[in-house]
Image (cartoon, rainbow, N blue to C red; front, top):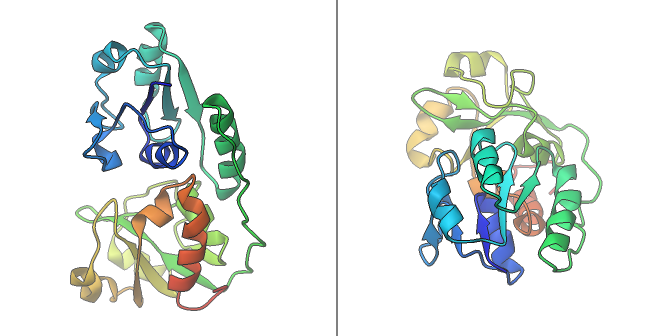
Length: 225
């Protein structure tokens, strides 16, 4: 089956299933595959020329106008909508059926009671935070981590003073989309103690979710680990 994936999480998942795409986005981090632009600006004409049996898109990560453009050209599409940890099982089961592979349900377990609140920066200059409804915020809530910007929309623009006013117990600084490292520790610890986390484990879903649940439990300083 010739599949084009316009979602990094899906590219990783399909490859794990033995259904490696013929092309993907440049954000999928697969130098061995042809790239067809980014998640927000795919090369529609090149995708059509590849004559795929299926193009996989996500309602949040990809633009509706690109979806409609592909649809108008008669390209078979599969649309995912993952905004919550509970979306992963049904969405992956549907995709697995479409590409004719089995899907083994996740072993998510019981969601922890709240044990802390956190500020999760996702960009710098300007500062932006993870909000809700988002997969990342839901993923952290599973461990009892309350997002201090959960009421401000999915990805609000913020500043560090506002973040400090929300009185988080910690800052969870992911390695993507902005590559936070120890270099930002002094800056972010003006808000709260900082813990670095794997951005892919926080934002990529699918097959990765299985091990990401275990890894995050080990990384978080307390809570349900």
